[in-house]
Length: 220
Image: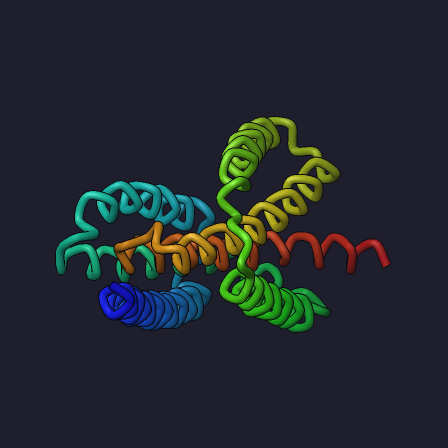
């Protein structure tokens, strides 16, 4: 009986290691693709409307990925998703890059995102705590933020924009913690979905940190 239990434990451990390896390998690819696409779009895309089109395409690809995640096509759609997400922020990065302190703003947002991701991932992987209790809070928080974002498209209140960005950063930190912990606990069995989820967390945190750091810098 003990031998059988040990074999199951080893098998589960091997499966977990494979899942983590595949997830973070794909995540690295997605981040590199997004970075490359954003760099190209800074030179090729100047219209915010074109960027909006890429954003809409990205949302559509999320549904496609969910339907194809168990096939080889899912991998291709995930990479396409990362490229459209990266392309969608080209004009935004151009805006920050052309500011007097634009380089510092982008660098600070990048470093802060990286530190948060690696730090929260380490906590989620090494903690024995089950973070599944966060799911309902994160879901409600995400719905509230989406409503606030839509409302501010019409209101255009700078203070509300900063509040939304702060809330998004906290939400993405929570999702990083929850989703990484879910991978470790075996809730995720598809590495494509896991990698895309983590990619969205990193991407959204970075974008909204740009807004926060810019707002704080412009006040000085």
